[in-house]
Amino acid sequence: MNAHPFHTEEYRQALEQLQVVDFVLLELNLYLDTHPWDVQAIQQFNHYTHERMKIANQFQEKYGPLQNYGHAYSGCPWSWIETPWPWQV
Amino acid sequence: MWVYEKKLQYPVRVSKCDPRMAKLLLEQYGGADGELAAALRYLNQRYSIPDKVIGLLTDIGTEEFAHLEMIATMVYKLTKDATPQQLDAAGLGPHYVAHDSALFYSNAAGVPWTAAYIQAKGDPIADLYEDIAAEEKARATYQWLIDMTDDVDLQDGLKFLREREIVHSLRFREAVEILKEEREVRKVF
Image (cartoon, rainbow over all chains, first blue to last red; front, top):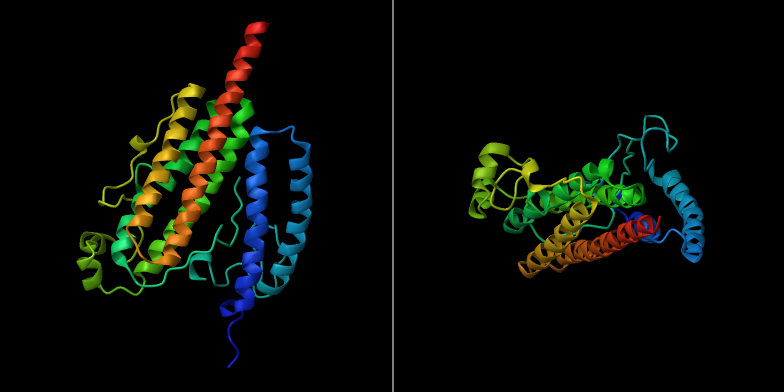
């Protein structure tokens, strides 16, 4: 029997890769909120924003939409309502 | 407008069913210095704070909802396999008879969340000092929660949240300095 794609080590690693880059971006974001003239931090932010888009697109192609309201494409049937929700992972 | 993202900010793992810890964690769910209070406090203060710090309150307030979801996930995972008898033995009997396995916004002692926990004074310095205090109180509570369990998986998630309180406190302190500088500049004019 094949393991459910969300119960694999591969899924957990893909999710963690996304969580890592998102953490970098969140930290840079909060830092820039109080240091808006730090050009190096802004360069880092823009670099990781680009990386994030690539990582998120790869993740979504395989595991479905991360965001609702038109921020990600859907397969048929409607993928948004599929489990697992974050607390079920 | 908010957009939901279908993932946790940081992975939440627990190594055992532990309704006793779930009860204690409610302090950070619906307690005075918990994540719900934090999110609502910051997002509500935005409307009267000077423009220079609205972005910070928006972003930290939004992150608090991600923390609220992590705490909910911890409580969910720690109680999902517990019997009513186990919940009762852990002190969650009164919770069970009112809410079954549903989460409820109360503190660890079962007191429902109230808006009286949060303040909005309209004075930017007073509001930011309250925010700094809230972060420090939450940091202390996370440390005490870590001390109350030997579950290293649960401790890992709690340590992440403890560190976030430290970063938020630092950013709020910087916001205070930004507002003080702005006040000095105005004096020159």
